Length: 314
Image (cartoon, rainbow, N blue to C red; front, side):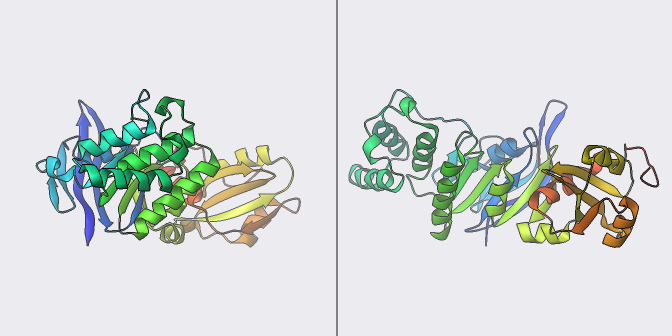
């Protein structure tokens, strides 16, 4: 059963095509990630999927409702946490939650019980009388998540929710997301953090408004159209420039004292061949792809053809 279905979802702003013919199929209970750089269409896609923005073309169905025609009916069933803190700085934590509960018309007795539950769950009990504007980044994040889930939505949209918090708070935030998923909530989260994307059940890689790949992190690593090698040796900066001039090389990036190299699978290189090209002063080994490698492989091909071609390393 699918929580989100989209066929050919597109959005234009004048002559600018922000989202181009994106297809989606998100199962119920799945944590589904949008991975991509700023400006790739993540936020615009989320706004269309929440019914806040009408598509220029394509069909969208969320929780069985057709958008944008049934957007009003959908809003009672979804939660939406925006990239920027969107609650009221001048209201206290408690007042913010009471205000949001009122929007969703939660009855007084149920409202009090639900707010107490959320304050305890998100460790905000001792902050309930503190104004939201005085909270730390992590506390604001927890408050925003509490507000987005106060009405127990079936589907939760999170637009880069951890962009302003430290790694410890990010990790704790994701533990709460897994709790929600385990309880049956479907979650769509946009991010540009690779470690967060790896936590998702499935991800879509977006670039320039187009979906470049879709699958579980392990599936995408297996299907990657490149082999990955790590090289150690002297003068890695110079070596990187030389390797990037070869048509077989998709990407080369220095990580610490090693060079991480992506080579197109269609050239069928072997470790021995690469070692022979590099020479005895370098060592190389084939390694397991990372999600960052997958991202580069699916978004960097457009630039590969612009490199000059040399047939060997000088």
